[in-house]
Image (cartoon, rainbow, N blue to C red; front, side):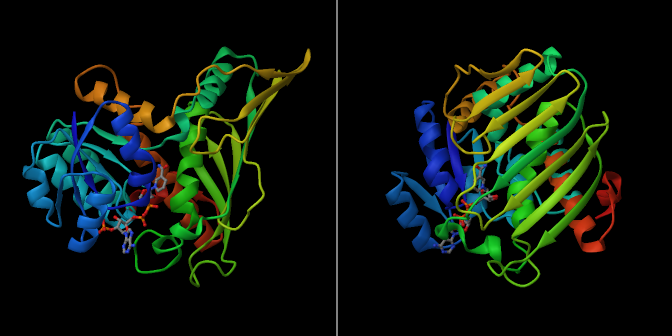
Length: 334
Ligand code: NDP
């Protein structure tokens, strides 16, 4: 399995390239928009080929591309890769407009290539266990859910995420998309409407939110609240699901690592749920991606999953901007 890396990014260097290698996969080359950066990045990451030209990259002897450029570039790069017959693992949000998101899914379908989204959180053993518990019915009928996902954005990532310039900045496109994906996967339902508040507390440029609070109504009736922030250094993230027969509270689970603890409280009291799967989230993602492109099952998060999380995030941004509840299909036209 040979990859090309589109985007000389932090996430590729810190998580995804090591995961590909751990899964026994090869990295053929890397693309950066800047020649010096592509050479430096290739050297630092022991990659033999580099280019600044996407067409050249798509001629390389590769099976798939991993796209982790800024959010504004994902769509055009994914569509070009699909047209060249390359399978695609794309970072979230898959695009920053509904029409681009739709064009990506259409291009992947037309060219018969796999398009997957790197929603790593749902791949964690802890989250798989949470889904098992919900599906088993142990919590009864679910009414409420809540995700607290406030972090301190590391200094090295305080670039395009915080400034205008249409690169897809802001905490909603960065973190809320993951929370939406986590909720969709656990609740097995789709968003119907959202009410959101956002604020800018000085970290990001004026007009770019660094803090958000979103309330989603799902088709199965569950109301879920998510909080996101780039400015909170000492938080422990949590994911709660509350039902008629039990409440589940998972701590330290909105993370890139295979960690966290689940507590279920029901008529028998509170107990910690054992989780045995602590495999690296990114290794799981690329291993299953390889299986999917050879016809063995589906990616852990599909293109449709990436589309739905992007759509929910765009609806939240629209709600915050217009100070009203927004139905999910209102963003179809953006
Ligand atoms: P980076 O800022 O590290 O990289 C994004 C782009 O910025 C790169 O493609 C690169 O452009 C450019 N860039 C990087 N370093 C420099 C530099 N020193 N000077 C100028 N330009 C530079 O972003 P992230 O890795 O944080 O995010 C990339 C994507 O991955 C985003 O879509 C993000 O949402 C997603 N992401 C996903 C995570 C996950 O766990 N699923 C976690 C973190 C991010 P070029 O390629 O042209 O060199």
